[in-house]
Amino acid sequence: MGLTTAERPRRRVIDASGADALADEAVFRLTDVIRVYREADVETIALRGIDLTIEPGEFVAIMGRSGSGKSTLLNLLAGSDRPTAGRVLYLGRDLATADDAARSAIRGREIGIVYQSQNLAPMLSLVENVRLAGWLAGRPIDAVGGRTALERAGLGDRVDHRPSQLSGGEQQRAALACVLAPRPTVLLADEITGELDTASADVVLRLLRDAHATEGTTIVLVTHDHDVAARADRIVELRDGRVVRDGGTR
Image (cartoon, rainbow, N blue to C red; front, side):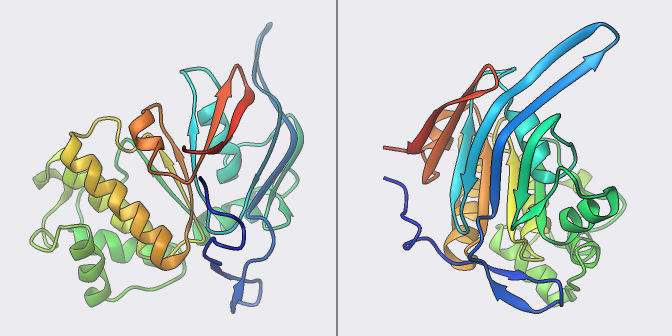
């Protein structure tokens, strides 16, 4: 069964004054969210009235077939897209009505995002990539902190390597280390194990579980893999733009 609200770690977040605060507000609260894409005379309904609440410290897997609305939902949570109708609240702030600058600030400072394709600066070493991620998030990371983040990802002997010198699995771990090092309030992960072998996928999932357990990071993981989803505490399944399942993993 998934954790109850009382059992979940309470995640420290950075409030408007820059001070740490314990999150009591739901991290995400979606109400009757509809997303319609229009191109010329063609209309595609990606989400059809989604109601969803994600509490602080939850580890949620979003599942569904291709075209079910998973990526659209993740983009709305990230604030990189807006709903056609409905509300998307992040810690009480409405991402649907926030201006571009406000959404970019939230995304850059509080929400970590990692994709299947690794977002590493190719001309920088791994430790420089981690430090860059901290700088972009407004939370400076020194060289020691960068090396520690990479050691946790099993890349302690690769800190001075560039991304092109790594295997695909190592690149994914490095990308995740970059996202986790600034301690985001939320981590959004999009099919990050999809192209990894079993051993590499296990390491990536361990990093997610460790961040969830030790930092109380709220994690939303999009995946089509039932074994990967089973590592979460809660599964939300989409079908044709609607939630058809929302509950524990067992």
